[in-house]
Image (cartoon, rainbow, N blue to C red; front, side, top):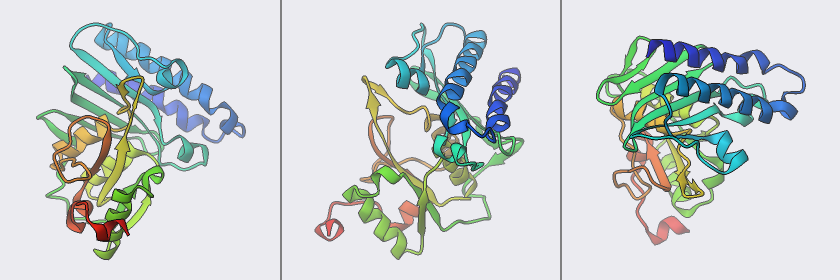
Amino acid sequence: MREFIAAFCDIGRAFRSRQRDPDIASTLNELEWEAELQFVRLFLDFFGDIPMVAEEHMNRLGRTIPGTGPVSAVLDPLDGSLSYASGSPRYTCTMAVKKHGIPVFGLVYRPATEEVFLAAAGGGAYRGGERLSASAASRRSPLVSVKSQIRDVPEVAALTRRLRAAGYHTERMESTSLKLCWAAQRRRAGIVKSLRSRHGVLCDWGTAAGLLICQEAGLRPRTWAGGAWRPATGGLMVGEGPYTAGLYAERASDAR
């Protein structure tokens, strides 16, 4: 697996070297596509002919990458595209391996800082050689990352009000996988977002690895209603901030 991780990071480094290209905004789609093709070839070399859900293939071709067997993969070659295009270092390359649809390995690579976050189901979560434990982390953050597109959803608006009343502040999500890793480190108090599907396929390429990292660090994802989250479309939240502020419950006062 070490060889796979090293090769994955080698491909991801191309984003760091190309970020300062003066025409990056106009060539970004092609860069993401080229990188994804390299990642896909890497998966085929290491895991064989497995099915894959890759963001750029879904965006461009509207389909998954076919394969056989109980093992599959999800891939986001560049999580945080808008941040990347603006020159921000808050972007990642991320992937997860699943067995029978359940994530068993997750990898988040941050090219700007050479950080590698990973987790194996039942084996813990790590940043490099440092094991992550949300309960043992000494630092605390007042920031909760919220996906911009859902801020006006009544459930999210209500939760945001309670977060602010509890002393938290909200920020843009940027790279979901990075913010999930930061939640596992307690560099963020949590995240709030929603998952959708496309052509009947769950679009979890930017969340699967980060959620596994959070779970292995002791943070359990919840639905907006406060129940245990299972991989499906709809709202999810992770971290101490949303829990401290009070899990969402349908109330007339929240909708006003």
